[in-house]
Length: 353
Ligand SMILES: C[S@@+](CC[C@H](N)C(=O)[O-])C[C@H]1O[C@@H](n2cnc3c(N)ncnc32)[C@H](O)[C@@H]1O
Image (cartoon, rainbow, N blue to C red):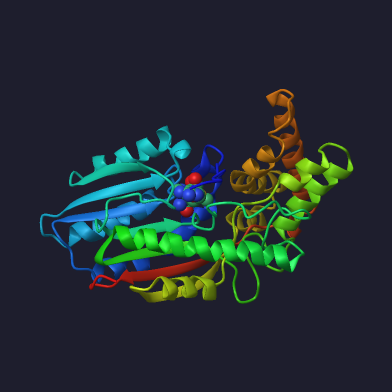
């Protein structure tokens, strides 16, 4: 799949405390999926876009324990998927720790875009993905006057990304449908926008983090730190879909049954801790780190065509997050990063669709 420029900063799970909570709130759907499934001798489970696995190990254990509890001398194959460049030592270590814990569990790694086939046809019993499928297969174009399609002021830009997002969602569902066994299930937890228009970092109480990032980037252009071209080159290749958009894709792909859907707000753990202990420095550092984990590559990419040494590009990005951290520290009660996540349980029809 072309145009894939997605890179999460290393040490992902250490810097994203909220993501594990997001995953753990899907256990009721995972339980329902396993309970309602006809299980064969081998249970195959895939975690799509798992990053370093640190946020998902509790969820893998939950699924494995659930399946093993049902007896039947069953073996489990756990497939951990992410982009090839994201497969690192931490994921391997986390995968190994699972098979060490459960002798009947084997762990495989699938270094492949989830826009492609990641497992053989009709092989998967249960597919899972969290906070990953908002990444688009390609960038429709660079938005000229903002960095994020959900926050940008122009309707045409929003709609262009919304159209790409609809195409991609159907492609993702079709790929997963091919890989699922008949009657197989998918539990997807996706960043989304809720009925009140909130999305990641925009809870309508605190500052919209996408506006904050864009404003700092624009001020870097105004201060001459970056060029106009670099300013315009910073566009997130992702989109936060609405519940209606998730449902529409499922209906249009066909052969899938929506068993459960809900959209939840998960509070920012860094802000919750700050409200308890009032430690401004720790809060500013923690919030900056978590925002940086999913946004840094966008700004780094935007200055990547510079001819000068790598250090200079690094300095710009450091200064950018330095300013972000300073703004948080100056006004901490106006900042948070709440997650808006959509939780889906989908089943593949028994008859070939
Ligand atoms: C925010 S992290 C989420 C990690 C983990 N699932 C969690 O919820 O904490 C998003 C992950 O999706 C992966 N990702 C993005 N696009 C992908 C693609 N096309 N194929 C596979 N993985 C992808 C990224 O590399 C990254 O590791």
